[in-house]
Length: 473
Image: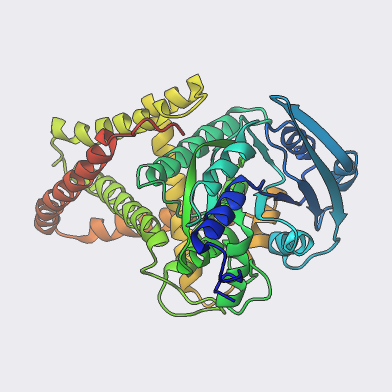
């Protein structure tokens, strides 16, 4: 027998060609898994959108975990066989609803349970969060893109934050900020060769073959592991490590539920930042070693360095401004208007690239103040995440986010409290200095800040003027 197990008298090239053709024309099979935790407000919309797809998943497993609301009973109404016809093609699927009860591994445990139900019978794993409503073409586009190149191990949809259901100014403000944040992140990935840093759990399709290889290469029993705060980021790194590409779709879209309170936003963002730091930092704090030079983490490093510059320049400006006013030494120079103007241009460029943008998205960018306030919130999340990482006190950030979403806890106020205390200390220390020393400090501080701000502004301008190559987020 030859390497492909055909008799010697058969033309080897014809056999290879036929097998390639068979594989190309064979219909791929897709299993969708929806981890659901207290999603009674969204699970009906999520399942309804999936069942109206132009290409239905071949099976849908809803994995309800740790829930104490009506999620299971609402999802159970969809259980059973369904079919949908699009362009004279009839697709069929079956919905299964599982309630696995108390699950200490939370979303990770739900994903792994779903994987165990489908890993042997399907070609692709479609993960959709319990609050993510996919566009009607999303599954079709994701399938087409992952089938287009065997080197692709996973493709993430372009996701944005849905309009808030909660009423009030705060919910709308936070939704606009999150939409701008997601849009900037997605555009960064799209213009970098569509290489996706994170195959987001909100809506991504993964090669089942790639997931099985991840198990072997990393000696894991399951694709997702509980010792990572960002399970989707880790599995994306592992898929990349074994030679597959991780991509963001150019067309598939999904809307995700946003955080509509300061408390819940803090819980989510601190968990995300903490998990990313854990993956970036050299050494090993858990069973998963940090990978600081991993190509998927370059954007993470860029985001963290950029955030550090934002913190330094803004706090330095406030300190120097207050110090100058205290001794009547402040002189206004119009050049200081350039950085905020460039920031508005950058924010507006991102807002205009948003598909189905709203007037609120444009206003958020043009008015400058809302975007600046939201950036200060993100700076607080950044500081809290790094502070938690460097302390010996280990907390369950999944549980912390869940408590925050329920309206419990006041940790989100800590950055403001610490800033007030440090500010008071600086005011007292400044008042004790002689006037000449105060003047000398200002003479050094303002030029250093000016140079730093101009460098930062140059990078913002470069990003604002870069080509988007027709991509929409």
